[in-house]
Image 1: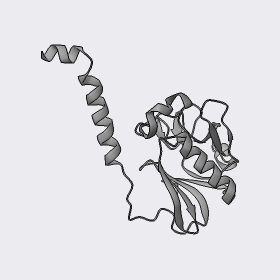
Image 2 (image 1 turned 90 degrees about the horizontal axis):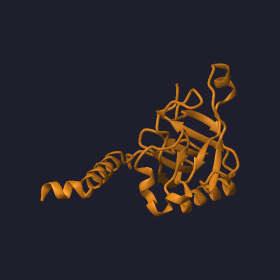
Image 3 (image 1 turned 120 degrees about the vertical axis):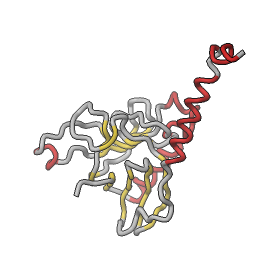
Length: 179
């Protein structure tokens, strides 16, 4: 009987889903910390906690779980699949054209980073691939992007884009930052 259950393919997916679920729960952000303190207007992303806040006048307007680059953080080279760290100009939301519904460009690398040899581009905030919509928020449980920041649903990226447009937000802060 034991071999039949294992052969059926039921146990392996169950173990994988359980471990992903436990990992996601272990990384919840510290709710008592004000991640928007001292910030007038910006999108703030904690790349370690994998969480994003829409900050206005020192308070969070809304927050979201996110997935970051599959290579981790501290992007420096094109193709490293890492998400950048630091402060960047945030571009105007636009249709993604690559199946992510909406794309909000992040101006990476900055001029000073280019002078240091940083390379790359096409980094931004977007939703999950539209053909993953049936997965819902689980799309943020694993870091899968090529360096971008991904929220968990089309509804969420539309909310973020609407807020960026209406509040005229022009800055994104990806933490932990370089000193």
